[in-house]
Image (cartoon, rainbow, N blue to C red; front, side, top):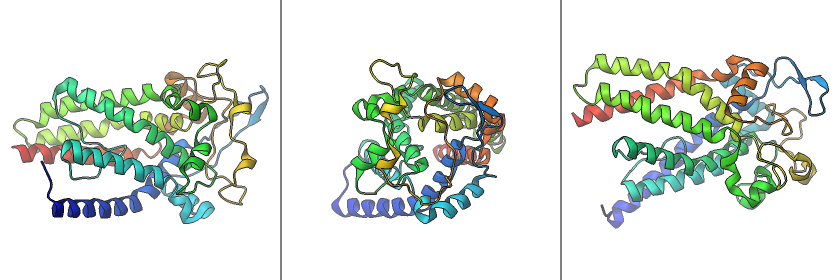
Length: 330
């Protein structure tokens, strides 16, 4: 479909206003969610990289809104909008692709992309492609949110030096090799596309009724038992930086020679208190299973369900959108 000049102008203006309004609301909320789920707060004695026993207790945050207040108290409004630029750039790129390639007139984000309905295998392929494209953007966004350093809005190379290790800067594809990250994303994707999509088609595509919708809504909500831990693990794995050098594999780390030196960059705040605690880079998660086990062992199984109600709201929204789609097609 070809757009006229006037229609293209108004479409661009509408998308721009939608982008500003959406980012103004969602960036602080996403930042609080990412920090809450990324916060490292072990409950017991830990061994440091040298094998010495010590107590490591991260900031104790009561919940989502508690994290919002903590961010504002320590970093102010600027802290609430950490991650703004990578979120905006990813949204613009993906929305432009959706408008040009799929005739979409809505905003697309790294967590929401229009999927081409082209059969079972086609949907998996499209979702996998979207996930692979969005993964680096998500990694940069999450790291931009949790970093204690200042990130200038219009100096991308400077910001990338902070967010990426020299190894990742030389070999950007290492973001995909972050232990456990791709596996976690793929499991989440397959559950969403294979299981939930199949049930959605089975229950809603023919003879839509409120009863069938209620069943599907219940399935979406119960699915949070599976999807919320995957989302928490993805957040923790995405902020885990890769320091591997040529003589090391992707798990064994060489932090001293490959890490950002703190004195090279100004701290975001002059206060000594950090917003969240982060796992030491010398002690990374080694993969999907290791990440799951160590979160449960060190922080407790409840950590896997941080901000679970946000995932429930997302599930309800997804079910409502599916119902509206199938009712329209009836």
